[in-house]
Image (cartoon, rainbow, N blue to C red; front, side, top):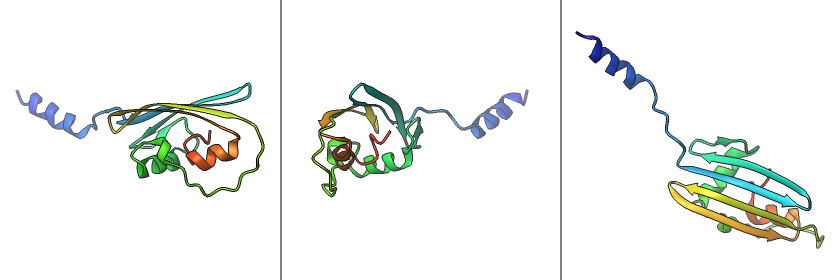
Length: 117
């Protein structure tokens, strides 16, 4: 009759699967081109090509994308509009963001690696 305690001990060694508390669906539209990706943080992952950097940037602003602007970029006056959207959660709290930028350089200056898909 010892199998039950043995099973409980083994179950304690198997890490429990929990969904990340922070995850976003991100989209970038530039003309007819459309990119879609997902980003998870804590741990960093998803299909985002720069998940580690994006999660670090979001961590600095508590998941508020509109707080990412560095204001330190030299961009041309080129008009090549980029529309971005994000929806998801940051540490269990709902977050959403939507903006349009005059060109990709301004988008990257304002949002860092988050929309660098």
